Amino acid sequence: THRAATLEVSAIDVTVDVTGATDPSQATYPVTSVLTLVAREERTFIDIAGQVTSVLLNGAEHPFEDDEDRVWVEGLPVGQTITLEVRALAHYSRSGEGLHRYTDPEDGEVYLYTQFEPNDAHRAWPCVDQPDVKPEWTFHVIAPAGWVVSSNGVESASEVVDDSGAVRHDFTATRPLSSYITAIVAGPWAVIDGGTWSGGASDGGHAELALRLLCRRTLARYLDSDDVFEVTRAGLDFFHERYGVTF
Image 1: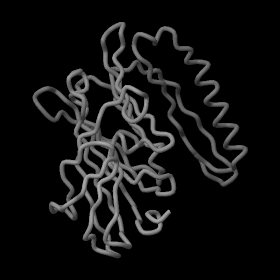
Image 2: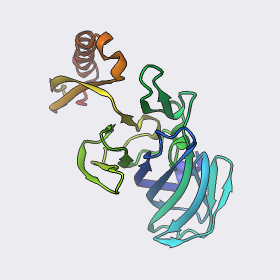
Image 3: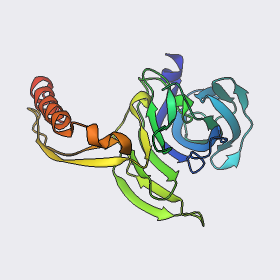
């Protein structure tokens, strides 16, 4: 409650490098979050369950205290818009919390996906991990060549970044979101296109929502995508009618 009252976070820009995910000896991955915020006090903390390597205030190295699942920073300019950049090594998960890494036993392919509810986003990247703080989020994911990568935003650009063929995927900024519903999904997924849902609510809005499913390749032949898309479309119809708010 105190942090929400003294810290106004307008945007978080996250870069996640999962190029080492296919190497089982790599337990961690580099991640950087740049938070744009206004602090009402000189001291605050950012949530991150990982090894913090550096903190930059407005682009300059800044002292910090790494305290378990928090990194504390002091000497913040009060009442000014600043950037606080936190660089860390976060851990791949095998428990379904944070950034989960799964190796398919049938073909050996590696798949990544996030699961944060209620407050596990800080296991994957530095953030203010509480639902009443809702910044805009922008994600960048560096992943092995040939991987399908998805996030909350729409992919806006991709480019090869090194000799290994690794690709950086850039996504558009989101609307204001709580940390626990941010997401990335990465791996050699099978992709099933579900077309577009079109509609709106009584607020007068209109949405064109592209639908697709991602599935491990070895399970694609068992996936009843028609049923999943039918239920999804029915849900979008139902909640638009009941809530009166366009998605």
